[in-house]
Image 1: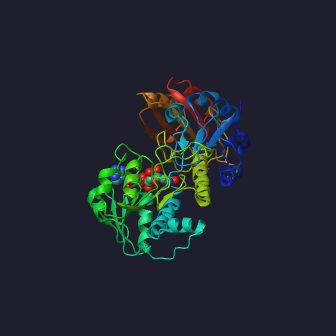
Image 2: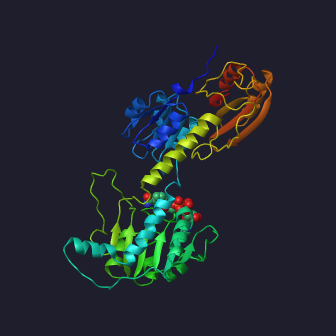
Image 3: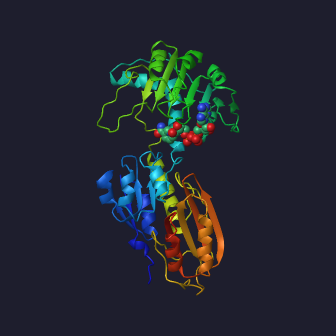
Length: 433
Ligand code: NAI
């Protein structure tokens, strides 16, 4: 029985107007792609993605536990965005479905916005612009400063923080940074020993840390009190990091000279919802609706990044970049390379040959199983019983599942799959050839 599966029959469902670069990548590789403008959840999502091998979403769709039962062919989920909260990751892991995202494709967008805001706050651009829109001509240098020579304090020297550092130094700023992990300075930047040390020196403080228990309320009344008078504060990271009522008091009292805030503790779920904040109406405060990473370039970069990760998993088995299953980085398949793609529980007729050389292809078996002792030895016995030779083996586990990849010399793929499927701990198994 031949059960090989032509790629054009493998369906990719892309929701929420994902950038066309993703559709192009899958179509170029031979997949059948359907795109939907809207997000979906529950029954609606299951209906839209019916029969899909790959599901691509952004932040509006929700993949809840019941979805996995309704999409039995699903091999992988791509979150074409930064976060993955909208997917039940534990359930996806238990179903052997890797979830991929793109955490760093918008790094440059956030860094550029941050640098623009440093200049805008220093020159009180927003105040001037608002006055002009109201018909007020106030030509004066009062409160306007150059950024050259000023000290920029970067809290969190990761992907974004270090990019901001480079751009700020190019404008002549002096950079001091604070990170809980030792980070090599870039250019002439200097590491502060503590947050307090940074706060005591900076003319502008910009936050680039993740939302963690430790960063919750990291900038509150005591920290604002420890800053130099007239300091500018920028938060393009996460809304939980700054105590906004304390910030509003600091700004209104003149202790702080201005702020730029892109992220809020309670952000509206829809554009149609209004925006409430104690910062509305405060002078020299730039408010933006969590758009720090939202640029055309970032959207395109995300589409390339996530579709690339999904295609590698489907075509080669690598789970590199997955957020919920063990990461296994695999080489190209030996003896002629990958010739076809099996869906869940699908195999290929024995004896397939590479079209170019006539040499039978090595089979790659991809096996997700519950992480309990003894599964690997059961797999080895089955392969030995069937007289197949294991050419290479890769294994990674997390708390819940194991992911084993076996490259075996050409053999009876269907028999191997049937026997592996019968192991009680097996979650899913597929074969590339
Ligand atoms: P990253 O993980 O590359 O860097 C974060 C850095 O913060 C790391 O070096 C880490 O060691 C450090 N850190 C963690 N806890 C710390 C603490 N308590 N004190 C000091 N340093 C600490 O992250 P990346 O990509 O640079 O992102 C930074 C922030 O920007 C994240 O919160 C991310 O969610 C946010 N972000 C916001 C966007 C927007 O649209 N406004 C878009 C993209 C990211």
